[in-house]
Length: 356
Length: 224
Figure (cartoon, rainbow over the protein chains, first blue to last red):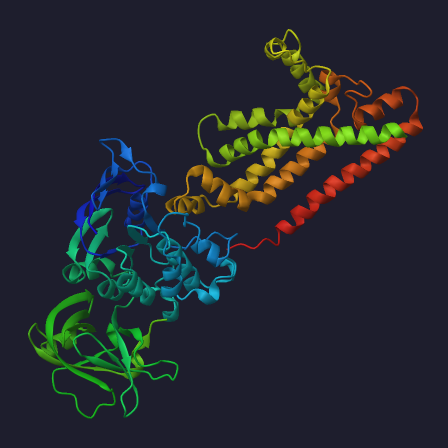
């Protein structure tokens, strides 16, 4: 995917100005509420009049206000998934998913239904679906049209959405299995880190930072997002395994594995994603022995950045996996947690919560 | 009594035709009013409501002046060899004009209930404006449209004032139930007039009952 953006759109309180080039297959768009994220998606989908500038997707000009060209939304091949899903209330889930399918054109209905696990929901009407289910149907509806780019606006109440209602695990499958490029608006740093290759930070309609996710989603992103009243999470994805001596482990890329709460319903070999709150991780500068926590890891501090008054976020790399740990500034001082320091992390099994 | 069946079927025919005639322009106007915000909207709305509040005879007079052989429209029609005034066409036309505002008002509120963002989503899924109207807006607004059509039909069934001016009251040619009741009363045939009034009441009951049934179910409508 290559997306060239050079747009200006006057909004009520500021002008949205985005000039950037994005090449990653998945891009996270982050910023405070009301920073212009949703407007940006609408401009890309062709749903906002009055946008000036240029939008070029994979060499195809979608908007060029100088040349007076503005491809109508129905010809843009954008898979738009709005915040509140906006399913057609008079149609069943299946009819919703098939809405954009045209005879003689590529369709990915079966794949979308499979990836989003919609088979049991197909005959139901939107009014009977939960928030997360609606979001999955909306995602499948967009995916089924074989879009050139998926535009995903994070579910409205994403901040409080129960873990099992999150669409993130499905988005990971869409990214890895359906391989459709996506632009994803989110408030969750942890989600953005695990999902995106690139990130775009918006503040009052201006691009604050853009580039590789690992670089952008650090201090700058945290500085922008604090005050939104949410804790940071580590999101870990991998494959479940069940060792002979019992228990359930998540094996991640790079070989690191994490003990997670056992449940007979979870079969070894399944892909899964877990969330561990950054504030629920214990950091020590001495080897941890004799602790009840089953996950004890040794790592190296990559950086330490302030989060809010009195709190810091330390990024610790353990076997290729970066963990974010929140601790008080006082602890950082007393333990002298500095980049390069060797530290030990302890995570209780019960702090690992499975997404969905 | 053989005349009654003919009267009833002519009246129903007129009301049906009038309703069908105003359906396309009525829906277009209703949709435009529901979505378009601009200068002059208030004036357009008021003009469209006029037939509802003007004396029907005044509307009939305007139609007569327009469509008469020397009227601006009448001359054009005459050139095509078409005569409207004092024909069944005039009955249909008068009823249609009188019923138009009722259809527009109800259909418009139906359209206003449809979230325009649903239409936006339909467009990103490949629908043109027109296609999205028929696949999203109309199915979601159908109750408002149906109620509007039933109200228009009921209005057309009982139209008198405009019709009598532009179509006259010619038995067997332009006479509808309501015109017949008036004529029988004038002739002192009160019993006959009363019977016709009973038939008219029955027709009205069916039309209004249907409207009510549709409106009642509106409250139970499943929404996302």
